[in-house]
Image (cartoon, rainbow over the protein chains, first blue to last red):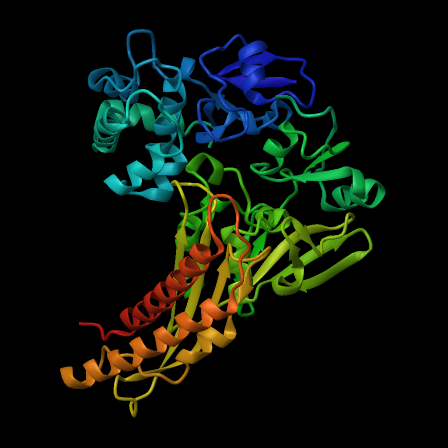
Length: 175
Length: 317
């Protein structure tokens, strides 16, 4: 089957029972998507499907024909031009061991832009806390993640802000 | 973890899907959102020989109001309901409940109808379906039948759905203007399944003769997490019928008297819920704790539903 990841088409030959997460790692060589619990609880494998955050361990790759998948490898516009969420994570030290980080980045990139943003409109602090509760981090205690999320939300909501526009366009691709 | 090998079939037309179910029913699991089914397959709690993907079926993602009811197709995802899909108070009730369903990346995939088919006794949508008296359209190659939510749920994860049937639509009666709604839930962590949840809808009818400006008509209450399936509690909620809630009374003394009467009625609701529910103890939660939780959430939901109805009735200034 053909799998479109980060605007690149991969020809993969996978059994039906192979998850999107395993396929990304083993067949596309994109190991930035981490696999933790394999049952939808931890959020480490979060990627965007048509702009929406999903658990890549709870989808089979065969379901993704025609879907535009985005992983952490495709989050930055170019090398040296990180996504606003990535920049905020770096500024606030929102990671320690880093295992959960790709999942958090994709969760927030999807939640703060694209179709998710259209549903939620303004995202307040309570909503941000609810969003980050989707993923597990055992190092940081979440305070630095929330601080980064707040900053990224503000930047991406900023009208006319170049970084925000770019993030919105990218997450919304495929619609 | 890897699921047991299966044959993947993605149907393009409903008839095609129903044929697969007719031929292989017992050996098929239907894949909509897959947010409960896929983990069960990874853990080998579910081992279907055929996985029937219905995500390509046309028009099943529609949510339309018609003939006094909201009709949700089998592919309406939780996420869609986070914003009211109808102006009727039912839209607000669904939105209030949707925020309790899993986490954002679960809600982008999981479906309302799929949750009913899965029939977890603590699931929000099963509770809402029973509370408002939803009806499920069950389609098969030999036709379709319509089953009331109350008749659909049997035991945890056991429903009236036959192996050759697919839930194609869920019909939820509109509640009508003047109905206040509330959803209350207690869960151990954010996004976890509820330990107990309560759903309430209370209609306040305008009545110039009533001291508060209105009287309570129908009051509905249902609970999840206290039995193997959600249940409506008409005897408990019925205590409120005919009461005049405060809010529009001409002076404070009248308001206070009405508040007192309402508080007494809610105390009676609490007693009736405590007497009506008989939850099984589990290693994490004693039966008494669960019962107490049910009573408090029931009263809280009903009181909030009354407030919601009154807030919507307030004259526009």
